[in-house]
Image (cartoon, rainbow, N blue to C red; front, side, top):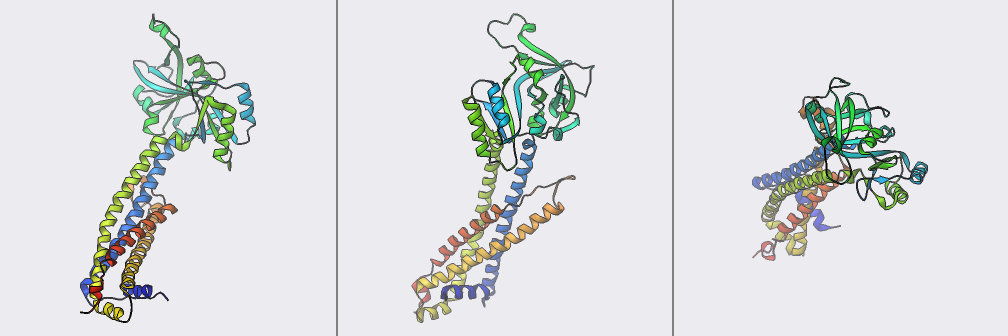
Length: 401
């Protein structure tokens, strides 16, 4: 039997005759419990905010996107199309043409990005789900769907033929511009829907049929700026990525959803790390109470330690007793804190106890890895604090002079 562990557990359960020491020990334990609970709740809150933020952009993000490696566009050959159509990894794919344009209505104008999409686009992403009012566009038409921000800045209604909408893009070529009429390609359009994704996309994008966009940009039939893919369920993403890359070659590079939102992921992960470090600093301060309570316990048990020393227990073993006691206190406090935090986050998720707006509950996401992160952090800090406190025990402290 491990004598040091047995005595450490006895000391952990027993109360001191000194009420001040009991109070300090209880405060130290409560500090660990609250610290662990707070850290888990904050990590769950940030995980919820991350999922909440990404859900708006991910609704229009494909599983994979092939973007041109050189220039603004590339040619999708008939051989490429045949090979992509026969690839078992792909459920659907859509041809895309994107370009910066000027969109005007009466005396108002704004810069935007037109995204020309084909008939498969609705199979690749849930296009209908982003429509706030109106309808999705028809391919063989001059219909467009605009974001909330653009709709407000140009005062666009639905199917308003009294307010013509024009889309302009500079004509490609060289040489001097002799007149503004010859400087731009122009198409007329009619707005049939308004979408809402997030503020950034609402203020920037308009959707249009791919043929309308080709005419606007004077593109050849198989000229595109990107391809968006929806993979079949259960397909390995990295394998599908390799297979598509082999077909399209070096003219494109492929991105998954994480890479498409690289800047957003970096920002959210940086914020998450910053909050974790701040709360870890708070926990470090709380663990000074553990060090203090262990040192007070050593002084309180001085007579008992002297007896142990006299019967042959070494100073190293006595140090081990208080090291184990502090470690156990930290781990037990961490587990209790995690249980409390789990109940709080589960109640928030189930019953929406805290609301951001009357209709929107504060989002939380319970992740298994957060349990391990909190327990690991508490355990490491507890071990360090216990080591510091137990190392203060010397032979002169336990030896009766």
